[in-house]
Length: 302
Image (cartoon, rainbow, N blue to C red; front, side, top):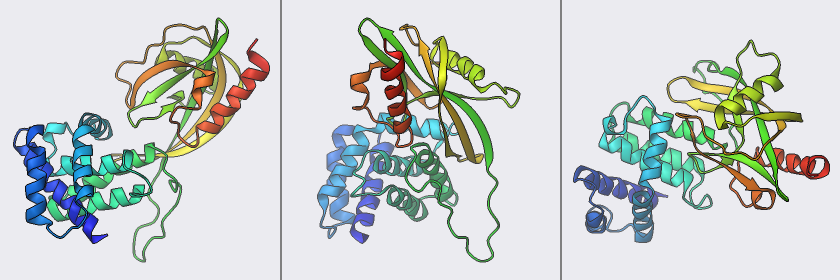
């Protein structure tokens, strides 16, 4: 809607002033009120402007961390003030706004339009690349759709392929069964996994090594669970099609330690089975975990 687009532009101008002026949160309310009166007097939905501005400021530490992970070659202070605040707005709407109000693709498209209107010559491409990387990583519906190319455009872009090994790691402790899960910077709990070298033909054995490296747990493979594919996007290298073979693996109930400098992950924990389904999972990971829990309860819980 035109009013929402105008509202986002007003929030962007306010964030620019806030950022340029030293990021003083105490002045944010004054800035947004003044800019709304000046640039969007007829917007009609001031609550949207206020909520978006407040949400970006409250989540800015998380948003900035995601920007740094999604654009590792661009330190945050080297990104222009306009571009980094467009990214903050786009990421906030993509990750934290109501999906019913702001579908994921709307969040991305609106950010790109802001970049075209307020940014430099390469801003829209940069914003598209960073938000595209995050969009692919969070496994949005429609990630496998291939858009129809307009007449005269080049053929399909090159997609690289990677094979990975992953595991649902469980342990028995006292009377309970626990699962080891890793947490990513996009707010989801997921499964430990690692990229396989082409020379590693024994996927199960290689997965044991990857689990050890990522979460410092010694595991014993019980059985194969599933295979999964998804597309990841890097703003520098493009699309990568990732094929993951998941196993059910048992470990001792021991202290877990996340691999240092592990891109995209920020935590690892044990969870009791009864607490698992309350966590935030990707849609394609939940069936794998559900299958693992059923197998554990049927065959490995005693």
